[in-house]
Length: 113
Length: 112
Image (tube, rainbow over all chains, first blue to last red; front, side, top):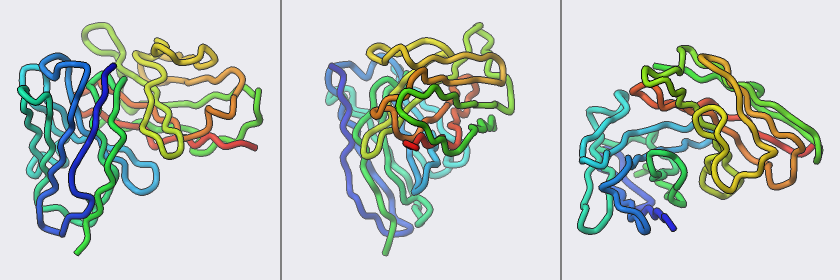
């Protein structure tokens, strides 16, 4: 069974970087696409970007100057780094397979001093 | 950017009632490969989103067949034929046709 699990700090200070890890079991990240999505307080969902089976990336232009998605195929993990965070980056962050059929449980990240 | 507008924002239903949710796109979601990458997801309280329907009308494995999707180009509909208690939550349409993938604003299904 495919499983994804996010990990990382739940509290980040403004202007610092947010770093999350998505650990995948049951399926190789060298197949398919793997993305990050966040849900803001309320209902708004935002696709942040993905990394493909080949390692190429695509990002939401609204984040392009701040975001980086990378991977470690030896550990079957992929990563999110979001720089220069503000309180507006407070959200629940999810990793998901690109076909959106498998999701992690989500990690709530609060940006606050 | 492709904007997906979902209506209604909130839906109150009784158990057994059939309901529909609309998703309208600001641009056609028909891809050059002939497919239309419009999906429907449900997020139950306290859970991660779950894929219900992919490519407009294809039922994801394990999803009850009371869920159905239809539509084309810019107008899409999710129908639940006989709401059950486990169907409560927030429904989202989302598109992956255009380079910037986007979500609708969500429709909250509540019990009347």
